[in-house]
Amino acid sequence: MASTAHALHILVKHQEQAQDIIKQLNKGAKFADLARKHSTCPSGKKGGDLGEFRKGQMVPQFDKVCFSCEVLTPHLVKTKFGWHVVKVLYRT
Image 1 (cartoon, helix red, strand yellow):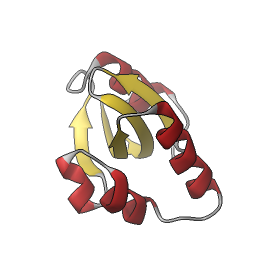
Image 2 (image 1 turned 60 degrees about the horizontal axis):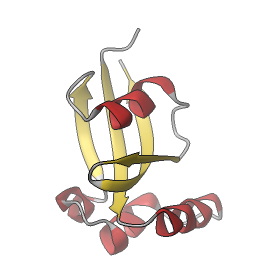
Image 3 (image 1 turned 45 degrees about the vertical axis):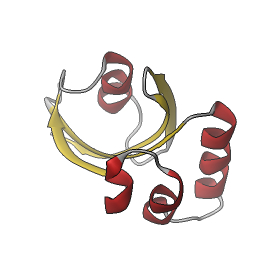
């Protein structure tokens, strides 16, 4: 089982906006460009790059997606911070 993951994310306030971002990604938009434009998280300035982190370091809902869902596919998750579009680059 993986103990670390490297992920990108885009944090927005509304589910509809997050779903629209996923549609744009599926049509070929670049994750980093959308993160810089829409993310309310400081990581948006870095294209949404959260770097590598360990299991248990993020809030539980976010952690679950990062350590159980398909890699390189955008996923939608709600946390106390808002709606996240998450793309896991790899796990180790």
